[in-house]
Image 1: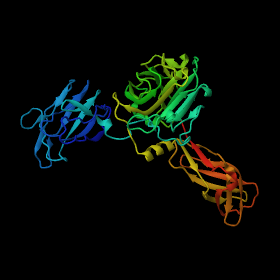
Image 2: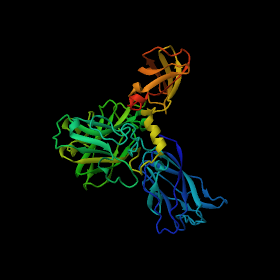
Image 3: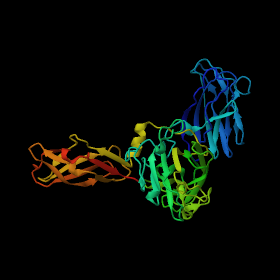
Image 4: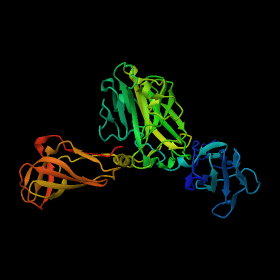
Amino acid sequence: MADTTTTNLLLTKPQVGASTDTWGTKINTDLDSVDAIFAAAGTGTSVGLNVGSGKKLKIVGDVIDTNGNELLKVSATTSAVNEVTLANAATGGAPTLTASGDDTNIGFKLVAKGTGEITAKVNGSDVFNASSNFGFKNRIINGAMVIDQRNAGASGTANGYTVDRWNASVSLTTKGTWQQNAGSVTPPAGFTKYLGFTSNSAYTVGATDQWKFFQVIEGYNMADLAWGTANAKTITLSFWVYSSLTGTFGGALLNGAINRSYPFTYTISSANTWTQASVTIAGDTTGTWATDNTQGVYVQFGFGVGTTYSGTAGAWASAYYSSATGATSVVGTNGATFYVTGVQLEKGSTATSFDYRPYGTELALCQRYYEQYNFGGRTSMYGGASNTSTAEFPFRYMVTKRTSPTISINNYLAYRVNDWKGGDQQAASFTVGESDTIQARFLFTKATANLNTGYVVYMNKEGAYGVDPLLYITAEL
């Protein structure tokens, strides 16, 4: 028994009068103990449980309503691969659930031991498992491509970050352009943004060439998968893709040392149409996989990868692969497009609905790795004069960073340093005195030493120098 976590689940009741009880889709779980609550849909509803191979199910306790009436009687314990049906207290057969209002609930607790899956059923249809019922199941950050701190929707051609947490790797900057919502097509239902690439020429990919989007997931966020051990967990990667081309496309998962990789493929059958794809991958039982604040796993989507970095799909390899052999090359066709959104990596062997998190939460998750601060034209920061030419300013980050960040400023000449005794002059230099994962101390010096030591100082924008000064605070993987 790998895990004894107990999770409360709530299954949403279908609309009153619905002809069928459609309560969602099947979702896998690796939890070993689950509290489940079913809303009664009406009379004649059969509630059952699928038990996966090697998993033993135990129903704990009889089910009663708030008035003490016995609704369901415990009657089933099995290790077989079948559907376990809870017995009706009166007849011993499948229970009849009688709704007495929208708030009528039937509750019970299941405990499972071993490997395999637990899946709840209503009227013979798979409905849910644990991972669909709480947030943060998605290990990808900004999978819906909505946060774009660096570029604010602007396009680029070079290697580097596109939308937050997503990196572009290109062998030649002249062969394509990436952008949030490139091409301005309508995103798939439920999404407003996507990350896109457009080919600028018909380029024959060389053996060592790579064009790809990728995200690096921090080791802390993958540690529970136990990759590199005999207990490695299965994951499912799901996403929406759109391309002007059809065929087999490729990608890969890699460890931080990029010496273990799993190339995968998926198919786009209809051009210029959003297609939902998913890939289920058994966790790697060998190799070294970080469980700290370093590179946990690379998730990569290739759209032009040469033979050196392409491997056989569907198996772990002791090699650096970014895509699968034979995958479609987008850069091979002038004007071809590749768009992706709704990227989700979750524990289990079935893709579930996308894990929508509040915008502010998703932004904060991104800011662990990168944030920008725009001082604008206002009085921006207060500190103290450590001597007649140096002003020190403390600065606290929006969120705790993954590691002590790299800090730069785009236009320190736009600052004037002032004190309350008349010292006032344009900043002459900017340095970071010290920094950690929570805060930093900035030093601004002045060409003329006219500050008053020990006095409070503040900064505001120097109007003659145009561009608002920006701080760039980077702690990326």
